Image 1 (cartoon, rainbow, N blue to C red):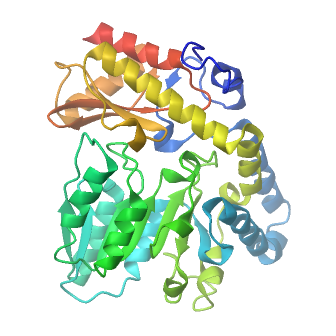
Image 2: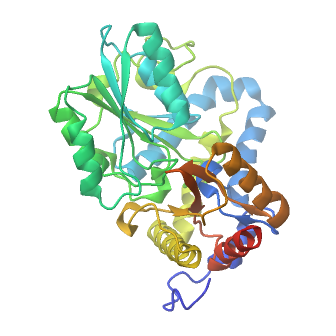
Length: 392
């Protein structure tokens, strides 16, 4: 990492020095941790131990060991979320959890669900599908982007609560625009309006200092395979105590109507090793320091975003206070404005320059979404700058 940006050596040992802890291809600039994460070698090895344990004696494992191991994994995760384990169940991802919540939602025909114009596509499609079946309606609130402050977002959201919806779905961190939302204040406002609250926290675990107990919501779901270093296919659903009865996983299995935990912990024969290695996931994070990881990522992505906005004479998508480990920067004019042009540019960056980064079409132009993880340093973003300069 460029020590001129961080002269106090607070993040010594990160950047290229820690890249060998991951199996990432060495000749790429990986600036898209936010989409799929990256699993450390040590965690992949722990996952393999669980897979081997299953295959050594499948019947014993599935009949005797599987359910206690799943509960132990959830119990290890729960304190990192600020909640008791009784409300936490492990699922493959946020999309699966949202499907489970909306499928069991008991709303009358004509009820309204409030989304935002930055709701994640898979979540939006889930809401569309289930609303069609049940006669519900969807309404969007357009959030400010670029965003200047949390108050600006909150004011816009509050205005959309009249008329009151039956349910609001709030992103903790927006995927297309990388905004860290004032989610607790938004949830309070929604509750005061009489709405149920479902928080899509796909990016929040590991990226933010997450404490679900401080967010007055009915359901909160997040991914562990993004910023927590878990293998792919590891997420969680937390349900408030009043909402657990009547909740069911998407796959109804042997423990139907035996309770929230029993049903979600066992949904049939599957490879749940990505969840069962939770203790190793947490150990990797603890070895590097959760606060130190977050501080590194936040500082680096903001330094990189400022550097690129200055080099390109453009703007950022949000002030630093609304940025976690991802940030938006507008690309120079002339590179395109459509989704097709965004995909073309992204593919060129990968194929010609070996730079992996999402490109989004927003506000009539193209923006790039930067991610920062402990294996990144400022040189990765300088490589992006050079590539864009060559293309422009």
